[in-house]
Length: 298
Image (cartoon, rainbow, N blue to C red):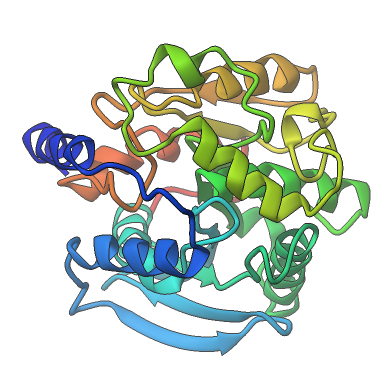
């Protein structure tokens, strides 16, 4: 998405007041409709699979290496979003990274609160390992809530000794379920899509009465030592940037490689901020595996 297109979208979002009452079914339908404007990927190879009991889809751009894979965890506040909303983004990542992308439909709140999404992401990882992929040829990535889930999944895999990928990418990750960061108010005018009351609404559905400080639900509070190289890519207009700064502080440990690079214009996470060129989005993530020798350039 170009800067001009993004500005037009921001203007449109600002002109539309938030619904007086919140309805998760309507929110899901709106998100699906918004993602539809991104267009399809007619030359992608898409294959639906059962990834350890989790509905999933392989998305592969022409020329990708089927021996390299990314487990992709979509955003949507743990309550909305799907393979469908993120299929085009997954295609772009596949085209830029020359890897096959496995997008999963993890279970959503409020029907399936925490830890359902984490359990599904972990099951999909174990399924990938069973397909014969060496851990060094795998990555995990996600945006917004999927970015937070990416970090939580890494912590869960480490603690359960289930193996770790070569690297991970968290795009504007949602890691603070309490809305404690100052950017939630300081950047209110720049980011019309992410509102504090909406975040807390979704957090409430996901937590279902559990503490918002649970490390595997809100990895802001997790011990991130010993994780593989992690690239956090915040959007400069995004109201969650304080969360990413806190993640960096927690991630800077002797055994962890951390990088943080901001997108130039984005106010929201993917798929709505899909780049006009796949290489624009992947230019920074491609540098993340620099210390993982088993994740070669295509």
